[in-house]
Image 1 (cartoon, rainbow, N blue to C red):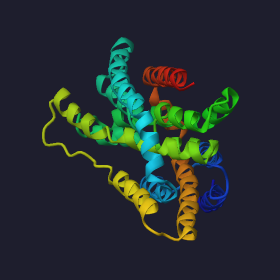
Image 2 (image 1 turned 45 degrees about the vertical axis):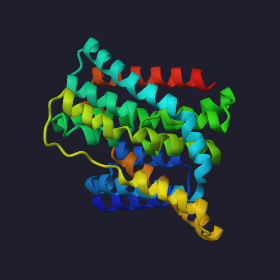
Image 3 (image 1 turned 120 degrees about the horizontal axis):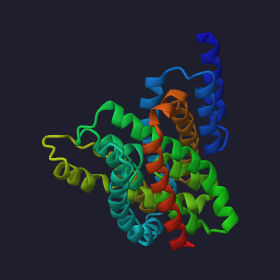
Image 4 (image 1 turned 90 degrees about the vertical axis):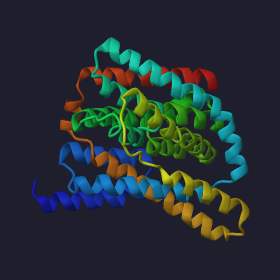
Amino acid sequence: MKPTLQKILYWGCAVAALWVAPAVALFLGIALAVTFGAPYAKTNKKVSKYLLQASVVGLGFGMNLHSALAAGKEGMLFTIVSVIGVMILGVSLGKLLKVNPKNAYLISSGTAICGGSAIAAVAPIIDADDNDTSLALATIFILNAVALFVFPPIGEALGLTQQQFGTWAAIAIHDTSSVVGAGAAYGEEALQVATTIKLTRALWIFPLALASVLVFKSKGKKVAIPWFILFFILAMVANTYLPLPEAMTQGIVFVAKKALSLTLFLIGCGLSLEAIKKVGAKPLVLGVLLWILISVVTLFVVF
């Protein structure tokens, strides 16, 4: 395909992504990537990272701190048990399936905490090479895409409440973008619950990074600090205690939701047939098993 036509399709889909549901935006990105290819690969990856963080902060202006703390408190026990349990189970299953130890550790980290962010934070600490990192990211990415599409229909079929679905999505879906996207698709309350619990779960990047240093005996490795979580909390505090005009906060939330859809489109553009082939069978099997186990167990607990 001619580069000019490819870019026209890209920008057309990007604009369309702003006005469709998050799951549809992700599908547009994936469809474009696997059929015609997506230009600006490096730029997409960089922009989606920061756009996601800005979107999450913006969503904080639509949340009440007291309600968020109540939601986070209810999901705290699930978070602690799931993070520790998934890490132990993932490493054990990795050995059983004979998956590369570092690859298994990265997949387990992404499943237990916050998908690509956890993998990106842990990879340099355990000295994972680019191949290990790309395999883990591809595995988690594929499962995120599936979760974003299938979770809302499952929740509706089972009659889950907004609170139940938000908790389930926050624990069982890996990446923040897919958690927020699934919550937004299910309802406003589900979005708030899912985002709050998910970001509480993301804080586990810090203890996991420290544990990784001890397990892999890594020294002098920098840990990527997710500062956007602090700004998300500050946004909630401002919305709760400051006399901000309602029109302003609603406008910020509106823009944040549009930015989220665009983020998912850009993430979808990062998936290629080559990336899927690189995943291989065993790492993908490990990722799927962990995902199914945490999804079923969490659903059983919240239902």
